Picture 1: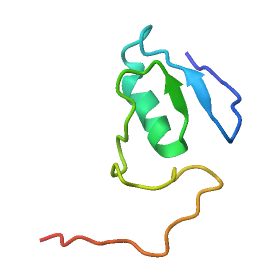
Picture 2: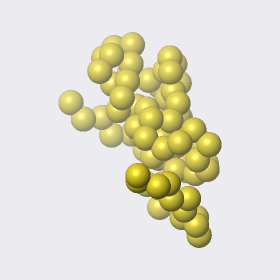
Picture 3: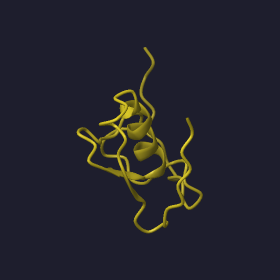
Length: 75
C-alpha cells in the first residue's frame, strides 16, 4: 500500500499509522529523521540513522550541508 500526503514545509505533521500497522515504526522514524515529518501519536519518534544532536534533515531540498565533518578513526 502506498499513501501519498501533501504537507506544508513549515510544519509537516501527519497522523501515525503505527497503531494500525506496527511495521510502520521504522519507516515513520526514518522519514522523521531524514525529512522532518512529525507523526502524531507515534510512541517512539526519535532519530534512527543520524546522531541525536544532528541539526536539520538531510534529504530535504532546503537542507544546507555543514562545511565540516568530524571524522573518527577507523582503527
